[in-house]
Length: 112
Image (cartoon, rainbow, N blue to C red; front, side, top):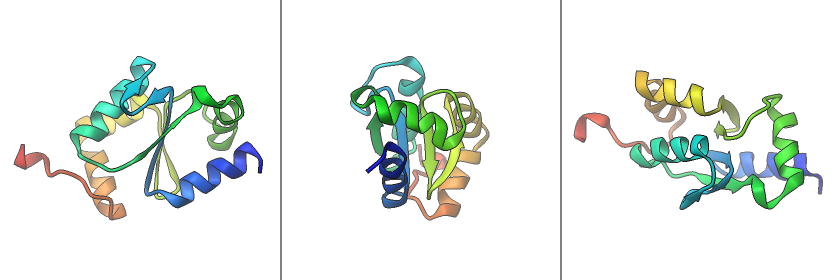
């Protein structure tokens, strides 16, 4: 199975997938850590894929989305963006709306 096939499989099998450096419990770059904090704040369940463990996935994910940087967030199979885009969407409320529209559990910020 190629790296692209494995990426497609992960993206198809999980509602929210974050390709990141490190793990959700131990991010190994600041940008990955920021996206983890946002997803954790929203209490959104997701699968973290550590690209540092697999060079093929690390290169393959850049080709898959035609996006040069990591982290990369996918929701219901669709590429959302990297850290800057996710942060901007979170700050505007657009990210929570995207999750709700996609049927992904998300914490209502009004209940904080």
